[in-house]
Image (cartoon, rainbow, N blue to C red; front, side, top):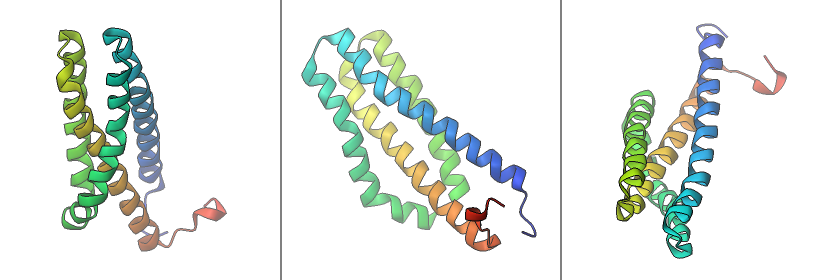
Length: 138
């Protein structure tokens, strides 16, 4: 394992875990909160549909973007842009501009899926490059 700093690798795993947990809480709670504010079952269902649409968009364009750009830069760009999208989402909720929630949630979930895809490719490259055998716990 020459050249690999396991502390940095563990930090990446911890950041990914926190990011995944936060995303799961947000994308489960936000449509439910929108249901509470709007009272519309249809609108809430449409907000849950944004995850499927984001998955389709990421499947179509994600591989190209991950291959074309640096994984680290793509992850950083997606996380920063997704942070801005989250601020926009909560601003939309506070100002009750619900029509903006659907496109902003779709974009935010697409960025989250692209981040996840970039991380998976980056992890695989690190493991192959450093010949790590993670199954042995080393």
